[in-house]
Image 1 (cartoon, rainbow, N blue to C red):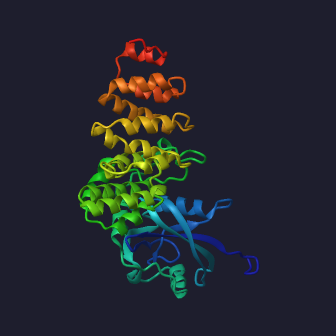
Image 2 (tube, rainbow, N blue to C red):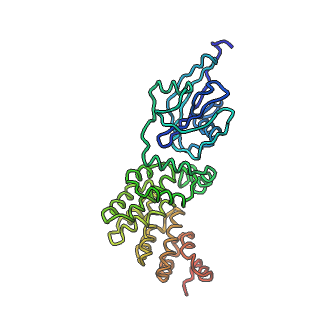
Image 3 (cartoon, rainbow, N blue to C red):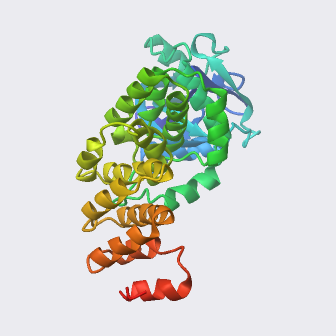
Length: 376
């Protein structure tokens, strides 16, 4: 084939970043053998760049990329081999798992290196990338260190199950939420190890697209609230209210609403709950009702019944469940008040809410209440 008829190949390289370091492997048995490269490979016909990056990364290292962003490109002419590539760089700052040598015939090993101390010789695309003065070099922050720990703990198979369980598909209540696949108990233990993390670290984690980052942030915030003085507790509660947009799944709400917001209102004004309960945001409405669990545990049930009445016409099943749950808890403290609430609102109560509210009653009475029989 003449030079005129030849066409360049398209390569995709993935710059995997963790804690200020990047993942590199040493090539073998191919052009550029002995040089250091990022994970990557050929773009297949009809394949998107993102799909190629995810596929190549997993095939070569076993890592799963939760999010990708596009980086630069390089024009790479391997003169001695007679090969020409255009290399498209993708940057993966949120990945799951530990790197494994899945293609030992192509790569000697994988390892992490600071950007400024990447080993040489570099594979030609990296040489050309550095000529552009591109860099991701930065000192690893505390937040980055926590994210790196979480990435190492991730379980891709469990993450896939969680993606389905927490309804992250298009049009579902948690559309776009990203999971690493880590058990809640592990997240709590990690939060204990980083209990001294400052509010800036918490803010960084809480604004992440990764679910477990936000969950750890809330555990850290709860610790900060419970161990702080009066002023710090006020500041934590104000921070929580200012960041409800990131408390955006039911498990995040349920661990934090009563422990932070509810606890902050123990002896104060609770009017903010009336604002939240009327919010167009599903999670703010759930925050409002779940916050009252703190009051219930202190023997105060009035706010729960008041807010529950405002949510009777809510369209969301997740609200029906949360209200029913809080009504059930309130009923443990004042059963007569719960039965009166059900009798008053029976025709208006969603069936799920009612079932949750009467769950602890013995079967005969539960069946009567389901039928609207309130004659004892």
